[in-house]
Length: 233
Image (cartoon, rainbow, N blue to C red; front, side, top):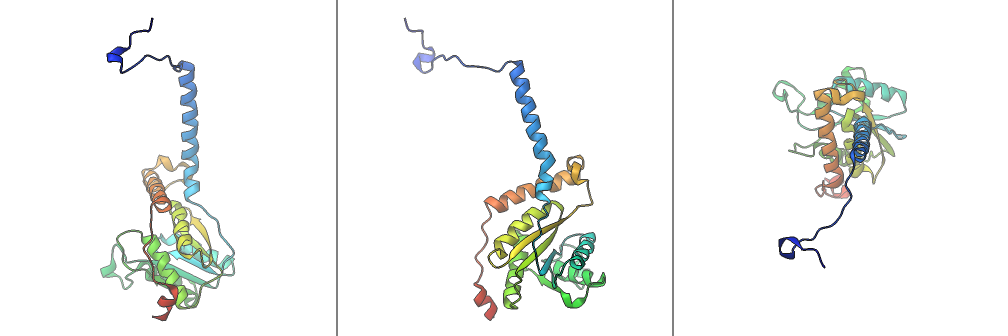
C-alpha cells in the first residue's frame, strides 16, 4: 500500500542525511580556515609589487609624501630616464594652491625633494566623476603617443592596497604598447599584516577589493580617439 501523500499529493516524503555535531564541527572548522586564509592573504594580493625592466617610472600623484620619497629612491636604484606623475584635479585646497592637479603638485614635490627637473613630467588628467585611475592611465597614454615617448617598459608606483587596481587599469590602457609593472609602497596608516585590526585598514582593503572586482569584471572603458588622430592634434 502506498503511503499517504501530504497536501493533496503535491509533496512526498524523502529520507535525507543531516550532519551530526561532529559534522557541523568539521564544516565550521573548514569554513573558519578558509576565512582566515582569505583574510590573511587579501592584503598581499591587493598590495602587489611586480616590477618589470623599465625606462620610465610613473607615480600616482594623489599618494602621500612618503610615497614620493620612495619613488626617488627607486629612480636612483635603477636606470630610469623619466618620471611621470599622473592625477586629476585637486579635491581640496585647489583655491589656495598654484598647482591645480595632483600631477602638477606631485611633479613639483619631486623636484623640491631633489630630483632633476629635466626628468620629471606632470601628466594631468581631465576632471572625471569616477574611474579616475583609468582617466590618469588614458591621459598618460595620450601624452606618450603625442610626444613619441612610449617606453619599452614602465613601472607604476602606487600606494598600499590600491596597487592591484592601478596595475590592472594601466595594463588595460598601456599594455598593448609597453610592458607595465607595479610597485606598491606600504601604507603607514595601519599594519598591513593585521589590517583587520584597524578601522582604516578594514575600510581601505574592503573598498579596494570591491573596486578591483568592479574594474576586473564590470568596468567598460570609454572609447578613446585613435593615437594617430590624437597625435595629429
